[in-house]
Length: 269
Picture 1 (cartoon, rainbow, N blue to C red):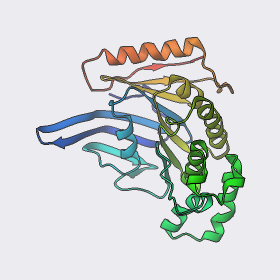
Picture 2 (tube, rainbow, N blue to C red; picture 1 turned 30 degrees about the horizontal axis):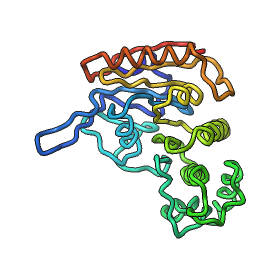
Picture 3 (cartoon, rainbow, N blue to C red; picture 1 turned 90 degrees about the horizontal axis):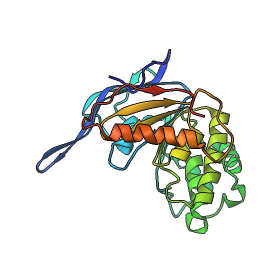
Picture 4 (cartoon, rainbow, N blue to C red; picture 1 turned 90 degrees about the vertical axis):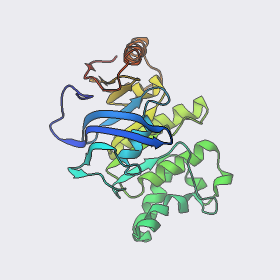
């Protein structure tokens, strides 16, 4: 059982029968069971579903920040057992260090990894230019708006040139206008650097706009939705696409089972 009916020729990210349970006083809570996903290199995948269905938990396991309870995760053919340097993570909260400037926050992973600052200084400045805030590089987080702080967090996640980018609802706390602007910025960045990307969201509009493929998660099923056409460079989503995804979400939520079922729908317009 798999979330994809057609495996890519080369799976850069592979989840095989992954399960996750959390221990509590009264026993255990099963969050995920038997999730199998193959993702090709440089694909942009959105994980779409309601709160509590295991989206963020899956992302944390991909980041190596949460161990799997069963099954296996492989990235570039290697088992994921701990955080990796070739993975970048953007959280819901920017989590910037308040005593550091914007560019110092961007360079913080370089400090942690013990890499040469001189090599990455120019890249940090170029990333801040790319997200549209070069003038803010010496400001502290308290001097930045919410959207600007999240732009700094994007740059920080990209500074060490990760091959896999993981994003856990990074724009959920922002106003609609800023959110749309950052979606366009994120897509521009992805089209320039082409990392493999996973993006967790509640927004159908956001998922369709950004993604090559969408994993629709319900209480009972994981289903692939595939966009076989080129992305429309607009911030709206057609009624047909939204209706199609909503119907799959409703179908998935009617299932009483946790086990994913294979399903694929092509050509979202």
